[in-house]
Image: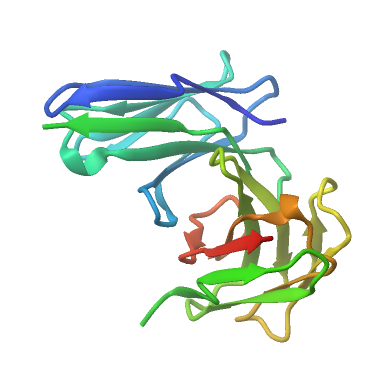
Length: 110
Length: 113
């Protein structure tokens, strides 16, 4: 079943923070985050595995709450280059495929 | 040194025609995928394939068929094209299956008239 992402869209000023949520009605095993810029292919950001792990690099990090069946992506001090559509993909334990959410469109303005 | 490549980049065709999209990866990955992204940007898995197993998303019409001549290629054949097939199709690959980072190709924009 498709994960639910919120918000659907967000507009920020450079330097502001944003949080994107990804919720599932099923138990999560792994959460995958990708970013897609307009007219381009999705690009991998990070994977979080079952266990409440938090990952990140530089100013983009994510958390995985197994109990709430939810993952959140945190963008700190956003830059213009962060603009794009962010997708979360869910993997079940024995999954051979990911199921992606409908995406969150993030726009960072100068 | 493109990692995942697709041809053509754009494809415009008439309803009822049969078309193919080619995908090649030079990463040495063992798993390849086809995704469909519609006008609302919904990214939907169609197929995943490694040299042992083909997994077909149950919602994909049987007019769509993947063909893999070797480990580095996974082509997509579409028969009897319909208006609703218009979308961007992405090929992707990963090593070790879907639980690992997937590398996407640049996409093929298919327009059915």
